Image (cartoon, rainbow, N blue to C red; front, side, top):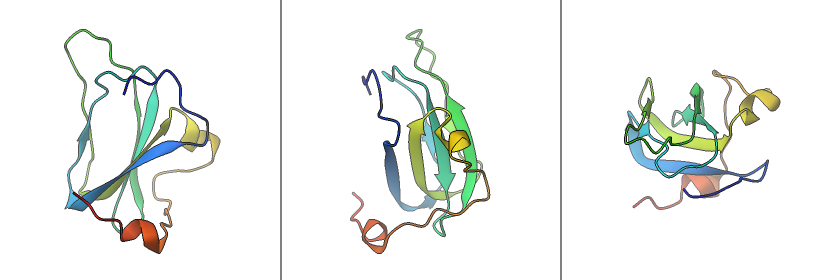
Length: 102
């Protein structure tokens, strides 16, 4: 939030305690992002594009279609540029899977 740029191969991985429907908005976000919603088994079930906050008091939500364990936010278009599609599988390292979730 508040970032003016995000390096091309960087992003943020959200890890949830258990699979559930997740909702994201772009409050105070200045750059367009893409988000992948990912099941516990690593399957990408949804990829969506999210526009920067318009500062008009109306925040659009991007909601997962299914319960997910992870969400990955990257620069908008990164998934397309890297040939990553819904149905693909993300392989997370053991150390990431075992991170504590608060």
